[in-house]
Image 1: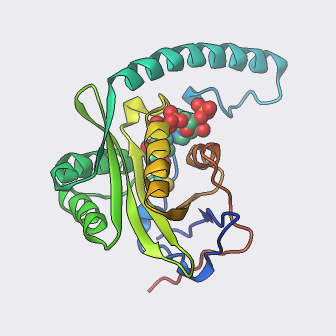
Image 2: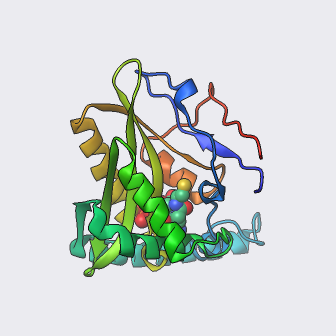
Length: 223
Ligand SMILES: CC(C)(COP(=O)(O)OP(=O)(O)OC[C@H]1O[C@@H](n2cnc3c(N)ncnc32)[C@H](O)[C@@H]1OP(=O)(O)O)[C@@H](O)C(=O)NCCC(=O)NCCS
């Protein structure tokens, strides 16, 4: 297992989490995002610092925004969110493997292990998850579990992913907004998660109000 740099997203103004933060149990949590996606989205590239390249990136960015706006409207118009249940295990597991078996994660999910992971999330006390459908098929999933704190409850977001070809169209944001609303309604005061530093997923979570904890450190030992 590679050494991870998982950013802990803690704590909110009202709470301290520290000892409750689980460590990495397996590679599945050590996720990054494909470089090609960043390049395709007009991000870092070999032309950094060059005025011509900057202008080119600007054009590409505007084109991308145009496409994304259309894509987002299309994806949003066709999407619906449901509470995660046993009926989502098969399609959810297929999607988990599809998303995280790709480079550069190169994880080795099989239909069985992916299903076991989702089944475990679903059967963990305090389990709560949502799925989003777009165009009639499962397009994304966000799932984890609630657990008690000294005051109130926290929620560990253990799995979150969107179908690769639908990423960047607002579906993840829809899921995240609905998840936060649903958890707040249930009395949860803090959501936390683990991801790599400096990848777009981190900016996605920041976009949704997540902060990197200055106090807590993620520690683990390989056995
Ligand atoms: C992270 C993820 C769930 C976000 O869902 P999404 O539907 O792609 O996100 P949205 O369209 O709502 O929001 C887009 C923002 O998310 C971020 N982002 C993260 N991954 C992205 C991707 N692959 N494509 C586009 N945007 C991505 C960007 O900050 C983007 O904002 P910008 O367009 O202003 O640059 C989704 O991209 C995904 O499944 N990624 C792969 C799996 C993963 O990394 N999961 C997190 C594991 S901890």
